[in-house]
Amino acid sequence: MKETKLSIRCTDLFIPLMMLFALDFFDLSGIILSLLLLLLFGFCGKEVKLDRMALLILLFSAAYGLSIFYFEGVTVDAIIKYAIAPWGCYVLGFNILRLKKDASSIKISKLLFIGFFIHGVLNLIASVAQFGINFNNNYRQAYDFWQGRIISVTTAALYYSPLVFYAIGVLLTQNIRKKKIFSVIVILISAFATLLYQNRTLILAAVIVLMGGIVSILLDSSTTKKTKISFLFGTGAAIGVILVAWITDLGGIRSFLQNTTFYARLTGANGEGQDRTKIWSSFIFGDAWKYPFGGNRAVLYKNKGYVHNTWLDIFRRGGIIPFISFGLFTLLSVRTVFLYAKQSIIKSEDRHALAFSMIGIAAMFFVEPVIEANPYIFYLPLVVIGLMNGELYINRTEYLQ
Image (tube, rainbow, N blue to C red):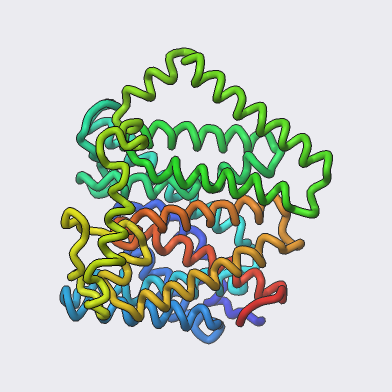
């Protein structure tokens, strides 16, 4: 592909703009994303390619946006967030590797994860500065560094979670000491934030990533028997150390955790244990199906505002067409992740770590209204799936066009 000087200059802006987007630099994510899509379609439009998944996410964006416009009114913010951004982010991910030859799916994904994580850490610092450190209160508050206002703890936790899932993948698959140390630091910072925000989602999703990673490594035919034995021994030893520390209350760690509000929420001691399943049941067996075009009219358990499941929240707000189209997109994304994880061109450690991170993000989607709580985190896996499909397309791997 012959590139013009103009297209070269434009593509050079993609990576720094994507980093600023992930950082939500000065609360300008919407504007930065608009610039990215303007560069993509305005200056590189002739070179943009679409696949079937792009058309599927276009159907989702159009139907979801129209439902919001009808029930909630037309605003510039809604047009960008719901009618343009989801489709645009996938297409951006799918095309960027062809437009910028020195980029890679791994590098861009890590860049985005790190950018969101930094924003999460800035929010954590701002939250501590505003509210102090108290692990035993019932007031779950977080503070956004860029916006200078209180935000939900769910929104705050979503920023740093993707890098945690990638860090778990690194610990499971890679032997480079610097990467392992960095991963441990990421996990420790996030553990502190989780205790402070009393957010259960990260710990539950991390356990799913960990278990999925362990099973994947043990079933991987390319992993030698010796490596599997060493891995099992190391994993067993780590679990043993954790159990001993818990049982013996080493350093008072068990006493400390059991006295936190987070522990009460995690174990259901505060009465919240079955709330999620009751909300889901009230949606599935309630009157939600009477409203096929959405509008947030379905009545939920205790009149909750969200179903706490991204797919069901999409149905409640946008109706059946966005629900089905995004559901199909999700199923095809699972296929993409499996194909990507089997690629031999990319180092196995990197592709497995990225695949594990997508498992964690999917787990978050299952228990949180991500598109409502933090639309920009909703866009993140769309970009990454686009990157994966773009890599598969370039390498001519088995690919659903």
